[in-house]
Image (cartoon, rainbow, N blue to C red; front, side, top):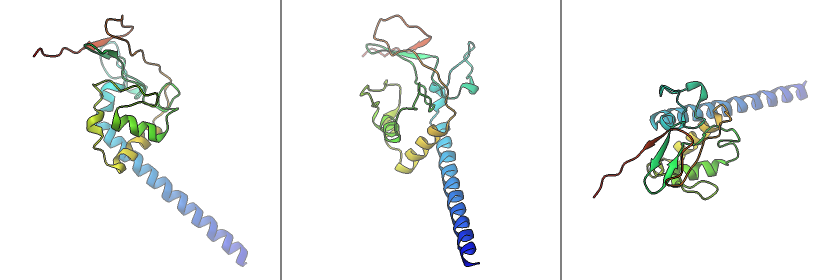
Length: 166
């Protein structure tokens, strides 16, 4: 009788631990989703239809409208889903570093329109929540164009950023 009781108690303890971990993970993802919403990740990283309306079913699979920055070139917002064409091959630390330092794992610096300098102020807990949420997104295989150098022909729609003259 005692071995059955010990086994049942161990199973109950493991089940409770797994449930607690799942609740903690869920809470982290919910917090990350909240942060992603107020940080307006979809404003750039969600594709648009021909009328400019967000294609919500495509998630954050990469912006279909790029940004031309004088002297730097044209950049399209990347795929943030955990697909191979997105963040699927990046570690959590690499995602966090890109968000807070503006540098990708391959060493390329993110386009200036990405407000990483503001995101550098995220608390460690909020940064972990944001990364957990990005990891929890449905993977969407979508390769975005670019970046391209100044004056190169663009293969997709883009906004032209005009800087004031001094």
